[in-house]
Length: 321
Ligand SMILES: Nc1nc2c(ncn2[C@@H]2O[C@H](COP(=O)(O)OP(=O)(O)OP(=O)(O)O)[C@@H](O)[C@H]2O)c(=O)[nH]1
Ligand SMILES: [Mg+2]
Image 1 (tube, rainbow, N blue to C red):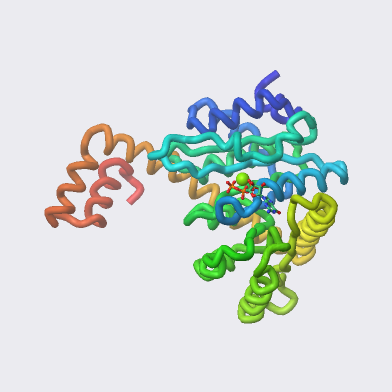
Image 2 (tube, rainbow, N blue to C red):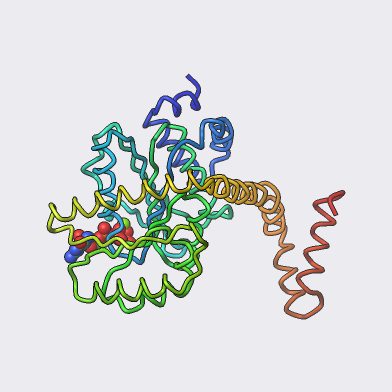
């Protein structure tokens, strides 16, 4: 059986291997990725983002449970934006959903970047495609909200959850710095802590100020109590799970799902163009030392970035400019 057929049949070993090859930028993975593209587009993709330690994995674990109760199959991608300088620590010890590892309806993988030129973004998109092609009803993507990464998730997810906890102080700052725009649902986690209602009030005030088109989606604020009180936690996560579904239904009913799909498709095409056109050129520039020479020319003000880019385009992309 070809690997694409295996993926379609939900073969865990084939899918795991493919995701590892995607992570390592193995050229053969590209062939499989191409062949499974037509199988994608069915899963609901949910991004879960927030600062380190806010309880994302614990929530994902709860959401898996809620989905399995509804007989839905789930893929989970935990994205670890490991800096190439710290050397790719594994997420294993931080993944809190291993109790689902034996369930054939659940497929959990982590994805780390090793600083490849292709970047994490394309790998995330491809790994989501793998889980989608496997036939998972829902794909949950956990990303740590540090800098660029959480904004990236919006390109891939139908629904983005931004997780906040009371008492971090910097949360509202983070919201102001751009997270606000990407959230479809806010979650105040560990809501039994001091400051939860203050955080909720601040969030609500901010939502009141933001422009929401008539009939548009106002991001709900869901509070989730401590995971150490399992009964309450389960009930809260059940509410969250229902809200995620509601958001998807809203996207379908309002036809916004088409806009999201278009945005995602454009982003994917951009990433593919980058990897097929820019990267090969960059590789040559690096290996021939041309890039270094260009940097020197810029430092000595002998040239400027625009002119150098035009020189490169003329040399390597003949006929295009
Ligand atoms: N007090 C309290 N602790 C919690 C709760 N939920 C999670 N934790 C703890 O917070 C820590 C981090 O939880 P995770 O779910 O791993 O958080 P995360 O956001 O996935 O963390 P990273 O992936 O490292 O960014 C763990 O020690 C959890 O046991 C909660 O509701 N209350
Ligand atoms: Mg985690």
